[in-house]
Length: 317
Image 1 (cartoon, one colour):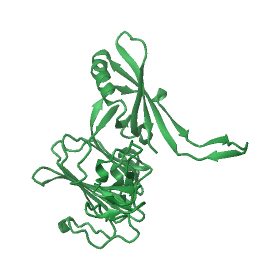
Image 2 (cartoon, one colour; image 1 turned 60 degrees about the vertical axis):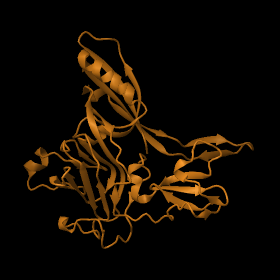
Image 3 (tube, one colour; image 1 turned 30 degrees about the vertical axis):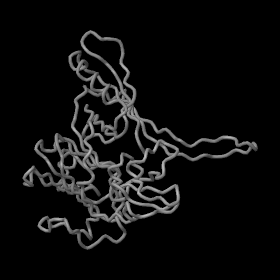
Image 4 (cartoon, helix red, strand yellow; image 1 turned 135 degrees about the horizontal axis):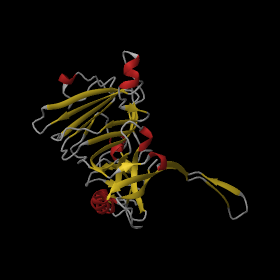
C-alpha cells in the first residue's frame, strides 16, 4: 500500500471558474466596522473591533485573544484546498456563460461544467485524488512546463460505461463513490486543469502528492470506524441536553514490510506524523482510500524476516 505526501499549490496562482463574491477584498485604506467581513488570500475574515484600519488580516495571529481579524473559512472557490472535506467548493446555481482565462480550444462549456480549476506550479506530483466529488464526469488535463498536453482524460462519475459484459467484469473502475483516483500523473506535469460537469456539482478536496510505498496492506486486519462528536450531558439545572457534533471517519491500516523497507519507512512516517496525507490500500478498493491526518504508528515485536505494523488515519469530515 501507499501513503501519499501532500503537495500544496500556491493558491495565488490557481484559477477558479467560481467568482469570489462572499465579501469585498481587503483594502488597507478602508476603515472596517465591527463584524465587517473581507477576503484576503482566498480566505474570509471578520472584524472583531470597530475602526479596523490598516491591519492586515493575513498577519493576525489566530491563536491570540487579541486578534483583530478572526478567520472564518476559505472562499467557496478555494474551499477544495482547505483540508476540510465538510467544507466543499460548491458550483453556482447559475454558472456564468464564460470564463475569461479558459482556453476556448478545449471545448469546455462553463454552463455545463460549473467547476473548473487550473493549478500551475506543480512539481514532483504523481498522485491526484478528488475527495468528496459530486459530478457526472471529470476531465483532467496534465501539461508540461511548456504548456504542451501530456494527457487529457475524461472519467464518467455517474455510472460505469461499458459496451459488453466482459468489460463490466474486467475493466477497472476509476471513478467510484465520491472519489476520483489517478495514481499515475506524468512525472513531468507542471500544471493540471480539472473540469467537473453536471448539475449541483461540488468538490470536497483536491489532493496532490507523491506516493510512498510502505509495505503490503493486510485487508483482513484493516478496518475503519465512524467517531461521532455528538454527546448527551446534563446542564446546571439538571436538564438533559444534546450537543451535536460532526462525525469523523478513522482508518486503521495493518501493514507488513521487510526489515529493509521498515528501516526506510519508519523515519518517513515519523516525519509525516500529524500531516495531511492520502492513503491507498488498493487502487480498486474505494473503502481503502482515505484522506486525513496521519496518527499513531504501532508495531509488533520484530519477526524473523519482516515487520508487522499499523497506523491510524484520522479523517476529516
